[in-house]
Amino acid sequence: AKANIGVVGLAVMGSNLARNLASREGNKVAVYNRTWSRTEEVVEAHPEAGFIAAKTIEEFAQSLSTPRTAIIMVKAGKATDAVIDQLVEVFEPGDIIVDGGNALFTDTIRREKAVRETGINFVGAGISGGEEGALNGPSIMPGGSEEAWHTLGPILKSIAAVAEGEPCVTHVGTDGAGHFVKMIHNGIEYADMQLIAEAYDLLRKAAGMTPAEIAGVFEEWNKGELESYLIEITAEVLRQVDAATGKPFIDIVLDQAGSKGTGVWTVQTSLDLGVPVSGIAEAVFARSLSAHPRQRAAASDLPGPSAPPAVSSSDRDAFIEDVRQALYASKIIAYSQGFDAIIAGAEEYGWDIKKGDIAKIWRAGCIIRAQFLNRIAESYAEHPDLEVLVAAPYFAEAVSRTQEAWRRVVIHAVAAGVPTPAFSSSLAYYDGLRAERLPAALVQGQRDFFGAHTYKRVDRDGTFHTLWSGDRSEVEETGSH
Ligand code: NBP
Image (cartoon, rainbow, N blue to C red):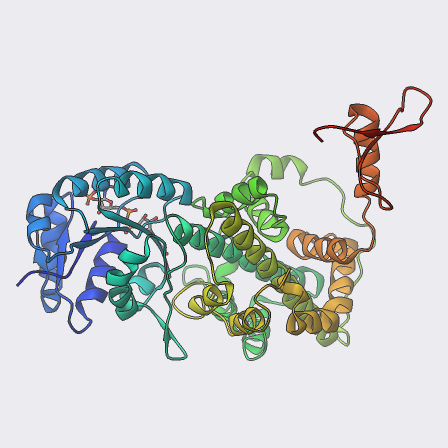
């Protein structure tokens, strides 16, 4: 019998995804890996999967029923291009090539265009949830054509995570839409992690709590509106004790955060789109700062506040609750900014992205899975043309309820000298967003002064310039401005 689906690339992600596919009723899975010994290893280790193992790419193509459908899970970048080139040689028009790796969405747009010219379908699919998700059910964000989705949809639905009875997969939009949304997911993940880290840092340094005590706080928070996978695992990390030293695990880990680039991509793309994703940017910058040990050593003697405020034991519970509220408010801003980037990307690239559906497919299988996403889905269901997520009734109420605590926490952090870039920048964004007048008017005045960049007036249409080096009278610009 032939296979209805194939997987190319059998490292940890590919082999887990292949096993997930094989475990679902009705699937027969063909597998191929550049290095044959790896294929042998995977096939031998998982006889229950009934894989059809292909030694060559030609054999792989022959083992698939038509339309052939293959998911590529190789290292993003050149390896993906190499595999696509090989598959295009052996596939036929109507077949479907899926890239399930972490591709940059602009690469996906380029690849989709090139592959489409051969009559073969190309689908860039963001797959979230790491190894465990690949094996047991990831959140899947496929782009590509409607035609490809027709064949691919049922297969992806069969392996995706399930949230409240619904599979965590939706056809996000054409060409690179899926990888774009996966990128934003990862950006939001960066912001969420940084915000949680700042909450921890405040409880540790400003309130003097131990990692184990803070673990207890996160466990408590995980029962309320902050309930999420990231809060849950944070409690577990903070509870962990290092076997070798008996110290809290958190204290033996080098405090230099790594990254694989999707956070940077989110920020770079958002800069190009003109979307202020300040929470995500601060999260990326916080990792960058942490990873500069020589600069940090050079600055380590610089002074902090001479009289940092103390949190007395009687104030501790109130402080903890303030931090919880600040975390929730900042989190709302991070997601609001992430959805802004999705809206801007959809407009720029012509994708019809259903925001509520994106929130729904993130409810399970991925790192940012949380109850909270239901509230986002509901907000977009009630108000499909919502200008900005934080202004949706549910979130507006949540921010109104928490913003005083948020301010107290940022003030405390500044006074105590505890860095909270994501808390602080989210609050600044919030205050900027709601401001009736922004000092952007002054910036426009400065730009007009030194560069004759012109300005608009609040009281009438037109484009104006003041003759700053002349008699300072105003002239109206005519023509092509
Ligand atoms: P890797 O990213 O480590 O890639 C290893 C695979 O790529 C092997 O199968 C290797 O074959 C193959 N490969 C390479 Br390298 N160069 C190749 C080439 N020129 N031609 C053909 N095959 C080539 O694997 P991974 O960690 O399983 O990740 C796979 C994808 O999934 C990546 O795009 C990654 O970014 C993404 N990912 C996602 C998540 C997530 O949470 N969503 C987590 C981890 C990874 P070989 O055996 O012959 O060397």
